[in-house]
Image (tube, rainbow, N blue to C red; front, side, top):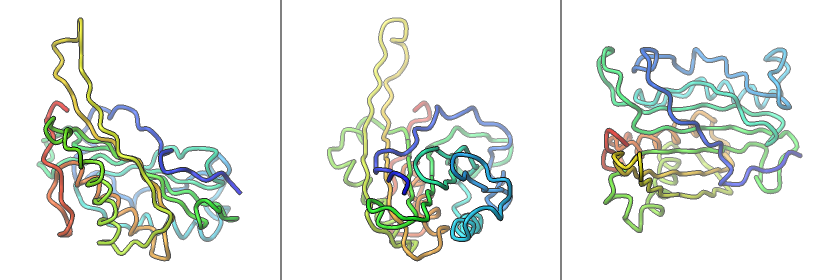
Length: 239
């Protein structure tokens, strides 16, 4: 069986790229993605070469309906964690006119792993591994309860989407970046990062993607949808 992915082993995203016209709301959607994923570290020759359970999971991800503020795209899946994997990246931007290309308020990665032989650590054959990053106001970043609250957002988001899970775990990290010397004019930057993983239950995989998308929106400071998840105050534009 492939090695289990611990909660803190979510892929670290690169610095969000500069927005382009393709990134505005109304851009590429899940139903236009191939979502082939990886099989033993390589792209399979045909979709039919994938196990039936993994093909079903890919279809359920394509059928997901995350919030319109969440712009998803398929990215290279990590290798070596499981025989089969698929990965999506997300940028969250407020809904706007097509001519308004706003910077991302939050970014993240969603990885679905599949090992037909199962894993004792996963307690199942599938594992979801996620990462979220967002800028924060300094007073919010200094709240000692921030990490616990962030974890609560994840739990509530999964519950609201009826996305049952087991063996959930994660870490929340606050980052304060101060600049000195020739970079002293740069403003201090504060961010929060959340790495979390869980084993999805019998609910369609799309519900887990939708729940994670809700959490990315909460980190971005957007009003909750559906009701019940408390969002962060909107981050600074220069975060």
